[in-house]
Length: 195
Length: 290
Image 1 (cartoon, chains in turn purple, blue):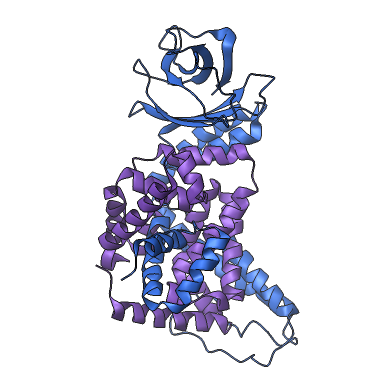
Image 2: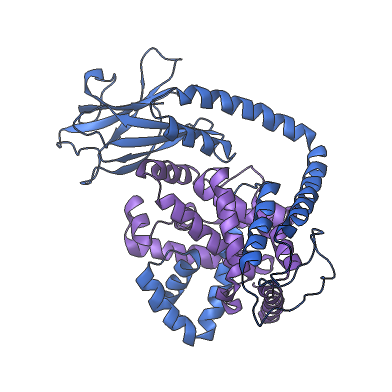
């Protein structure tokens, strides 16, 4: 089960305090956020883009958004780090869309080939949350039915719309929507307090 | 209780998979429904956990130094605002960077004040990185050996006509998660279909792969495209199955080889009679690559 309403409220208060400090121009708060979450944001950008140099540029852009546009963050809709992940994903995908169709095809193929979801590399979750919690997250992903995991990963890491995913996987749109819904809700239940 | 339709939208919204119109419509519901906001908040944490399954990479210390430089440059050029106020140092900061004032800064402060801060921050991050590295010498050596291997591959590929594209493949392999896959780009050999392209991702351990084709001309019903794997272990290419493309010339297909593959050196696609052939018709080769 989830952390609960009390946990959410405490988290929201923490994030609100942190963002307030960043908004106030408190550099140490900004550096603290960077130290904790830059490996996650950098890893996400590198996973989407497939290379480090552009991922560095994305990380820098995202951190400047956090410094300059922290007013866009709404604590009611997620933690500060989950907002930063969303901003990172969107910025990385903007760059990905500017690439040639051929390059995008390779990246899409890579995700499809990974449909086993059983990975042996250390994940960004390990750096941010520690090994134990990272393993819990990894196990939850592994236990997800392959078709649900693939639809979710294609949506997040390639930026394909649900219609595009339906076309790519040769499934009805309704099936893809249902897979994403079931997969996300199942992950929510399985991850519970680890989130 | 949130109905399934809204749950679907919430899941897609948290993943960023709604288009602009759907997003706007969903955000209207979001504004008036606290239960829906709570669901989205939880699903965004799921998305963050999903994002964290990416292979772990540490950004170079230079990124932080560049960030501090940019922030200070902006501050130096920004007019002082009514909201400017002094800020006290926090109780604990992970990096001992000096604490500064708000974004707007008095113009009398020296513009190059960022230099010692940037250097201090970079040195601090580098120190941590050095400490980490010293405890991981063995894995570093292995990584270096891998890097040399990748650089060798990279140098070979750079000679090819599609150097940039092939370099992208190498970079993907560098990201660890794809190390076990053999990724090949198949270019069109048809002057009439120069835009046709395919990617083959082969997992030698599991002896299966994924094949994606774009812009290949659909065939008449009595013909099939056939995929071949060139393995030096065998005197002729190994049959990896037949396929058809859709009306737009696209297909995604899981495939297996008819024989155990030791080394998938190259991949090729030929046009064959319906059902495929035992040996490829090399005169009807439409895609090939490594």
